[in-house]
Amino acid sequence: MDRISGAVDSVVRNLLFVFAAVETVVIIVAVVARYVFNNSFPWSEELARAILTWMVFLGASSALRANDLVAMESVRDGLSDRKVLVARIATDMLVLVFLVVLTYASWRLISLTSRQIFPVTGYPLWIAYSAIPVSCAIMILHLVVRIRGLVAGRVPLRQEFHVDEIA
Image (cartoon, rainbow, N blue to C red; front, side):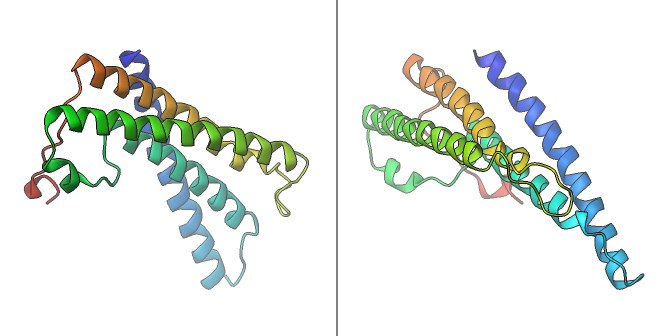
């Protein structure tokens, strides 16, 4: 299951790279067209919005796997290893429950808007909205792998942070 999580994250990171490149090109072309040629592409805003939606949710899944999301590490510093383990598993379980609820709610959103389309391109809105359940499913996979790793002792309890790593 660890390999599946890693392979999925690799695909997600490559998609994020492609989406970021396409997003950059679309926005630059739209700005140049609007301000240099005094003529804008009406589809550029819809495409940029859909790509950004996918980037946000896929990026969250990759950040969750890398343990790069915001956390209150200072709270854990004063706890014993046993309490840190319980806190991490409890936190991950709460996040898991939230993701299951969010997945269900996003499927409901998609079903409610399944016949709606983007006004300019005519593409269905579910293309953008489907980023939510897809990314939630990926995050659920990563969380299950992490919880199993915590229980088995393969995942470190405390994340060491060094300022020079972000410089």
